[in-house]
Structures are given as C-alpha cells and as structure tokens.
Image 1: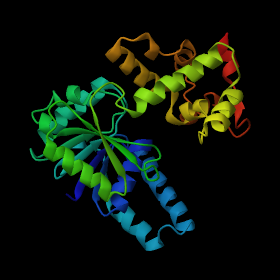
Image 2: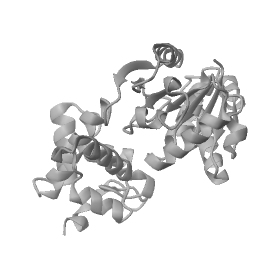
Image 3: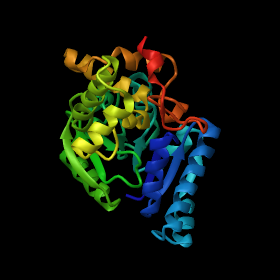
Length: 296
C-alpha cells in the first residue's frame, strides 16, 4: 500500500498528509477550497523547515516529502487510484456520511476507507457504504507529525484483515496504534472530554480563574498543558461537537456540555483557531484570560 488520499487540508488533514509523505507514501491531499490547500501545504513546508532547523531531517528529505504530496480540489480525481483514503473533514455527521457515500462510488472496491473522526460512530459511517468490512477509524492526535498515538477503531463489521493491515501501516508511520471498539468518544475523548468539560464547569461556577485551574492541573497532576489551554488548542467548537455526540450516544447528563462552552462557541470564541478562547491569542494580549465576559 503506497497510494494514500487524505480528505481535508486543515490542521489534522495536513498533519496526516505530512506524516504519510515523510514515510515514503504517495499522498493526494484533497480539499474543495484552493485557499485551504495552499495554507495546508504552507503549513507542511513550515513544519518541515523547523525539522530541518532542529536537524531531525535533511533539506533533501524535506524536498522528498513535499514531492510525495500532490493536491486536488476534486474528490473524484483525488481518490481514483487510492489504496487507502483517510477522511479528515470537519467533525460533522452529515458531512462525513455524504463523503463516504461518494467514496464508495469513486474508489476501487479494494480501497480501505478510514476516518479520522474523534467521536462519531464508525459503524454508522460504514453503513452508508457497500464495504462495511473495509471502513475503520484512524484517530490521529494533534500535532500529527509529533504525537505517537493512533486510536484504531473497529466498526461492528470491520474485518480482522483490515484492522491488522491498518495497525501495521500505523506502525510503519512511526506511530503506536491502539485498537479500540466503536462506542461514543472511543477511549481518548470518552475520558478527556468530561475532564475538559468539568474544568469549564469549575470556571463557570466561580471556583477559580482560568490560569489558576490550569496551574493546578499542570503542577498537581503533571499535565504538560492545562485543560482550558488544551481546550483552546483542540478548538472549543470541536470539544462541543464531541460532547454532543457522547451525550446523544449515552443519554447521560455527565456528558452534557457546560453552558459556558456553548455560549463561547456561539460567540465565535473557539480558541487558537479564532484568536480567542479561554486565552487571548492576539499579538497585543497573548496569554491573557478573557472568559469572564461570558460568565454573566
């Protein structure tokens, strides 16, 4: 397996494309938005430059990686010879179902269809295709080129053969794959998101401020990043989406998103991606907390 298509040139998509290309795979990076494709390729190039600067790779290896990636803004042309497709579009059920319906028609019947979803049911996605045995979850962690973990999620009908092949492929990328079963949030987000949500509840209830909450978790629990800073890094809209998926899946109040999180997303305060979340990432006010306005 050497021909891989990656759908979505955003943070996760360009990181996945970078990782495959750096490990010798021929990658087709697909996004309907030309500006997103350019931004994605610029990000890959910048990240490779940093690796050259740190002497982790050579200039020649950087160029080889870039040469392994070609870009497409049409799904049909991008996936026509793919042996593996990794979908990394927005965490939206309807969008993913639509993409997989198209992929089932556009790709060879032998092609494995993977999704980078962090919470949506693999079984549900597979059900819109005629190859449920070849649909699997590959949940990479952000930043993809650096983080070692890949959650490999088996849908109800995912075959042993496909699971083994994707586990081995993940190892070939220098990753550590962990096989999990298909339940809302899988393992990583089923544990992580309630913690982030509880941290937001703690702020919402006035127990402590943003920096105080993050400091307690960093110094007291040896977390490299505080939970509110991590939520900003993930994207508050993504956190809200995952919590909603788990709440719908389990019907358990413990997964209900905090009202503060809901209000911040409604206000467009999504974290790093929007320049403001629990912290302000603008040049003039970096690292200042700004959430108190939403507590009213």
